[in-house]
Length: 75
Image (cartoon, rainbow, N blue to C red):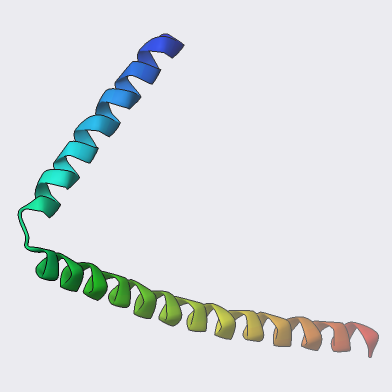
């Protein structure tokens, strides 16, 4: 595809996605929407905390292994 065609397709796809999201969100009342968004963000935050904790544990384990290897090399 030409560059211009890709841009037009991207703009149309973005407009369609935006319209779909707007229609989906407008069907709920404001308080229901706020509750759903709040719950979604809380779940996202909890999942992020869990993944970061796991990542910190892995980093600590790797650091310990590196220290052990350096100690073996220096010994």
